[in-house]
Image (cartoon, rainbow, N blue to C red; front, top):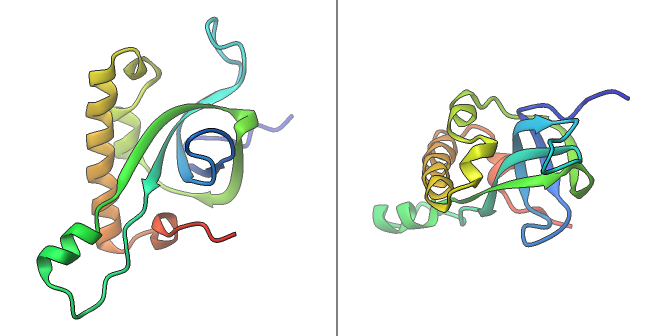
Length: 136
């Protein structure tokens, strides 16, 4: 079987709290581990996407509406739908690892870093489609 879920691949989460949300694979584990004997991936995604901004809005309102709420999660391959799209994510790889899920404070730290990276990417206009809501 071909291994096509690699780091940088954009996926849609199918099950659980973040069902229907877009995420990007940070690290993949095809064979699984001793405590997780199934194929899984560490994903970082957009829980709440930025709202629409118009030219009549002030700077303060634009800044508030341009916020991104991220999530970091370990997801079973069966619960994600891979897309044909990919994001380049050199900075995210270093911040999130499987062992950052052992301690809640580490998870919060990695979420803050991802939030900063996602908002920076949104502000520059790269990958606008990633930050839009899925309509289906």
